[in-house]
Length: 414
Length: 149
Image (cartoon, rainbow over all chains, first blue to last red; front, side):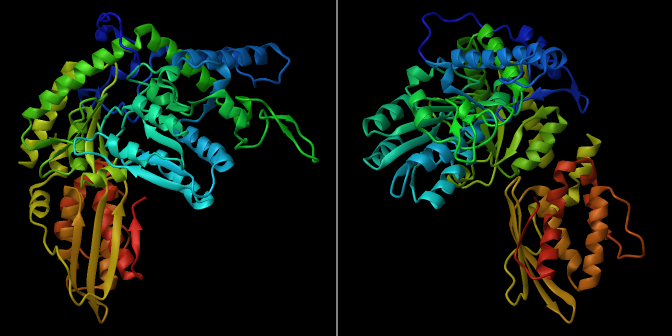
């Protein structure tokens, strides 16, 4: 998250696009314009190859086998953990827990940290713009443990009302769980301020980084957060794999959340003992290939440079924000000063779902709906928006195609 | 483009812009709500059923052009129709928009509802066209809320 000392050389997008096989196809007779990256990102060839290579050469179960393949698989899997530690700049590789994705990471924290260490009257602070997966796990905990949820409101431009959020913090606050970047609006939250203020009252902070990690350099030590969650598939990696970063002392104090193989030290009917972190939280055979694929994605992203990716996407978002202004009746939802990767909007007189269908016919893939963030949609009095979300391989020409397709919607709907 | 034109026919635009039978129905004796969680479309359908015949059908709610037009066209098609015939109509309509063959046996003609046939080419939009009809099923069988999920 630190500012770059030098302005990085711009990303060579034409070359980068060559790395993504899926981009080179026609949809309904037109070149695919993939602007649904916030839902899932496409995969560079190196990730696809890492998966096939693993299955073709090394596939075995990890941590237990005495044979060569198992040793190779174990080494690759644990190597992936180290790779992700570096990607997030965690202090220790034991702080990297592999999970299925951000949803599972948050559920793990809610079930283990929450159930194990929180009780009636303890408060968890969220914001109104959270994804359902950073709301519902806490509601389950609310029901089960009597913890109290406090929700910081969102301002008209899609920023979180920081003063209100800080006002919710107090001696009862045990955890502040907020998005790093909003998946519905693109707002970048002032997470460092939030971390500082939360720590000042002795609360822990969980950052939902699903929409941030693909767009910004993430340094968990610089952020100072206690938990950071991300999904591999939004980070140009495979589906079904993600990361929970948590401070080691927390992982040590937290009880296991799923029982099974790999998470134990000894098992007997008199009682079992558990493995140390991170394995304590990785019961069962993990998604070995997924972790290896995610490590390949981290290699790829760092090869390009997260600062360059950020600069490219910032410029593209600014260009797109201006370009859609030419579409009559279009209103942006979410215009916070700091945004990343996402353009959410509505068009007067046309339902987002109809827009999505017409854009698809022009080869432009976007998302139309509530983006699994119904409370923030309600905040803006909307059932749905259209969301165009950008990735490192998107171009100005693709933004132009989006805008042309939106004019087409106006033509059809009048 | 032709598929798109077939989906968004003039009749559909007309019913989207000026939905028929939209509003409350005092004296309704059947009611159900429908919800499409995918796109947030919501509909409340109210019927006045007497002696096994749907005398009135009106709806309220917000949705995309397809679901609004479908609800509007449905309420027009239901008025004065025996309940059994309405159910047969739903089966025929469902077959029309999903592209399945028409159910065997004689059924009521679809008439104007056929403008929604274009939905067939858009699998992700079938639920928009059928939301009102699933809500009708719920209204005829005890009410409550249906979702398309």
